[in-house]
Each structure stands twice: as C-alpha cells, then as structure tokens.
Image (cartoon, rainbow, N blue to C red; front, side, top):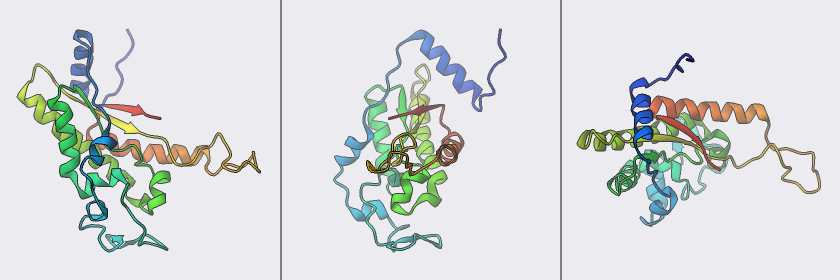
Length: 201
C-alpha cells in the first residue's frame, strides 16, 4: 500500500473519496451564463474598491480608466453576493461539486486589466465563496457533503503557437512565466479552501 498524499484537508478528501465510492457526483454548470443573467454594468465590476481606477495605492498603470466590465473573476471581490448566489443556486439544484469563479484569475490574463497584482486574492476569495456555500449546504444535509473545485483556466497567451503568422517561432509567453502564474493561482485556491484543482480549457 502506498503512502497517503499530504492533503491539506484530509477529512474532506476522505469524504470526497467515500462519496465517489457511493454515488455519481453532480458538478455545477456554467458560471459565465449565470453572471450574464444579472445584466451587470461597469459599476458592478468596479464596486467601491476600484471606482477610481486604482486599488490600495497600486497604480494600474497607463490607461487605468479602461473598462473592467467582463472581468467576471473580479466579481468575487466587488459583488461576492452574486457569486455566492450562483454557487447556492447550483447547490440548491443538487450539485455536489461547485467550481470557483476563477477561470481567468491568472497574472497573464489579469494583466489585460492591469490587475495582475491581485491574482492571489482573486483565487483565494473565489475559493472562500465556494467553500462557504458548500459548507452551509453540507451543514443542512451532512449525509450529502459538498465539495469545492478550484478552477485554473487557460491564459490569454500561449507558449505552443505563435500569435504572429509572419513569425512562426515567436512566443508571447514562456514555460517559466506560465509555471509562475499557475503556481500563484493554485496557492490562492488552496488557501481559500478548494478540495480539488481542475484545469479547464
């Protein structure tokens, strides 16, 4: 028998393995579609924290007046009520596993919004919101524990294909940059309470 892995949350992992042995587990649905149904505007995405185009003394750089609308990961900080509500709706519908709102929460992807300095926080808070919803539903029905899937999505750059058809050897990121950006995101997800890490495409 092999040695057990050094899980951060061994009791939850044991519950997950037991649940997988007993039944088919249901995962939640799309996050983006649920967010779109709220018809949010720029003020929702900015909240109070980003209303002036800066955050905690961090200048977002040139062009800080850029739009944040569409940066769904940011809603974990500016409209956590909506993100928690999405998780709760899926749990109410019978989901056993909910995915964090972190599909684009990497430094590479968030650099499009000049928000790469809050990537760890986006992932941690995304996981905390999902964890709180799962724990609340698990407390109501302990015989059906719920679990958090920490989501790592693709980045807005690729190391395998050139973005320039005239220069096939060019890459706009490197393996080392990708490794660092995913390490930071993963740390936030784990610290926020994710039970499982899932790489999405």
